[in-house]
Image (cartoon, rainbow, N blue to C red; front, side):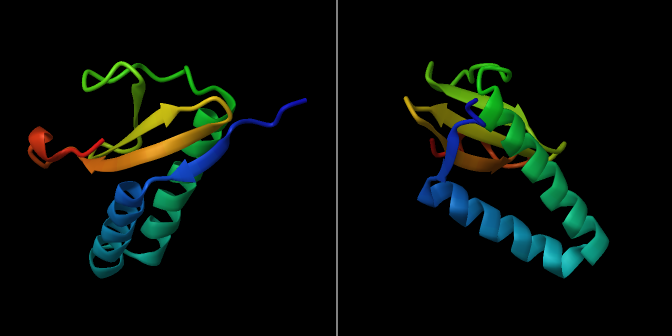
Length: 100
């Protein structure tokens, strides 16, 4: 039985995650950071196993979006044998700055 699609990270998504973790490290407690990671792991597991669960984005027809937190949305693309995480977007930013 297939356990799910492989998850790959685009450079932009990796930079986004690094930025989020830097912010959390400065402003949040370790417990809250662990909670963020748990939410992220849970969402990535769902995306990996059921990538069509989350709706297509308005940006491109092949890009889907998943709300991670009130402030963060995951944008991803489904490939034939993998999922590419394109961006972890801070929803408080100007939507035109989203790179997918």
